[in-house]
Length: 135
Image (cartoon, rainbow, N blue to C red; front, side, top):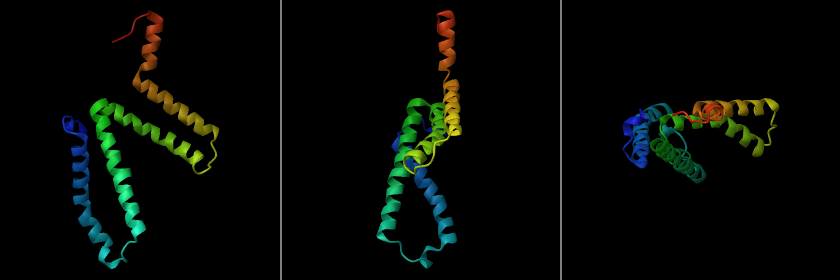
């Protein structure tokens, strides 16, 4: 789907996606949550919402579509394999969770999978064995 927007600037595509999804979900949220029956949010809650919207959503989409335009759809999807690795490392560093051997095995498997998808080990093995590089 994102390939359709290949020539468009990343900012335009990200903004369009966020505006369209907000327009689709706003009526549902209004009907289900009935915000007029809830107490008004605090300034801290509004600030947290704005920070999440600007950093975690808008900036993330902008980066995603910029990488998509430069590296292609396959390469941008490979980043999703790094989410469990990031979660394990952040859990260990920030939350003080214990890093277990199975986590290391899982991260190594992800690394090998990414390398296999990328094709570099195969190219290196071919080059070492024949002295030439495949196309």
